[in-house]
Image (tube, rainbow, N blue to C red; front, side, top):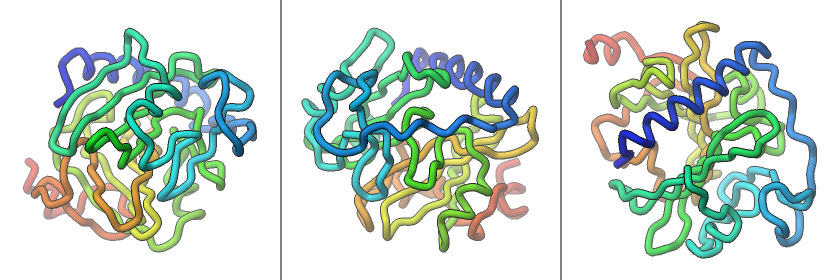
Length: 233
């Protein structure tokens, strides 16, 4: 499970990033189209570093099925990075300290030393449609059809707006968008873009989808239905 140190770090990073997002009215400049083919060389700050999120396949140069060693080669561990075990396996947490648009992070989930889920919470990476962290849900809805919606009924945290996370999910293609709440703007924003193997295991925030905390809600919902909201009070 996440340690208190991790929660403090995540809160600080998100508070700083969200402050910048508020000033920009969520108009994050789209990531420049860097090279997206071929082998990575030189690490995350290299001009050749891939930045594309591909559903069911990869985030940047890191692919589903890659080994732990490959993940650490692409994203070398720093002092602020962490690792822990949870219900879904092993998690590597890499802080994107050098991102020109502000700090973010990358979360890599492994089972038997193989990557099975990758979560981008940094503007370094983007989908083919240009969707990245801090973008509005409307941009996701316009680009992705037939998404299902779920709520994760774990205890909300101040860093994520003190409301449960909402997920828009395409299990068939292996992509999900986690939506957090920004109180100052009174709206949701893309907190994470998650890639996983199509029709395979998906672990939202270290929870399994057979957990009672994982509840389906109407498609493209941004808040909990009244019955779920009342049950949380």
